[in-house]
Length: 115
Length: 114
Image (cartoon, rainbow over all chains, first blue to last red; front, top):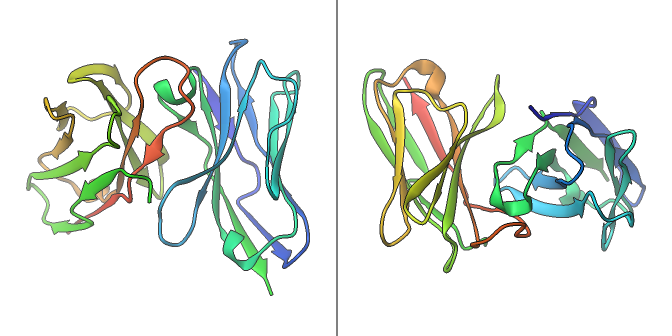
């Protein structure tokens, strides 16, 4: 069974600075998908970024980028130019078939952006 | 707005009771997933339906059941409720086919069992 581990329960960062959230996972499969979801105080689950394991290039979405290290089974999220609206829980998730199969989530990292 | 709707937003009930949570997927999405988010268990997959049929089961209790109707909306039925069933229940949907991009989540139903 696949597992996802987020070792940082809480983190904080100053507005406009950069922060990196860590995620490791365990799988014996070669092809899979990784995601970062954001859950603000409204509780809505919002997709931040996704990465296909077969793609060597790290995914980027505006201020959000990932560092995907397949051999190390590591998938970290970097948030640049942090904004107050980035304050949220961030969940790392794994799926064998992108959006067509269950997501396995980590426990989450609570990120606070301070003014 | 993800396009996935869930009703009700909040539900407060007593132990031993039965409730039904409803989900309408995005237009065109055939797959519906149910997840439970609780403080002790985190976010856990419960069950998936695809075009009316059960496709995958996760850590769903026998007291819980779900179905997907011909109009593709889905209902999650929780019976003989216990205090530990208090949680946020999410529905998500995705388009037909393998290797689709992602699942889109509804706003969730917060269940409180007193």
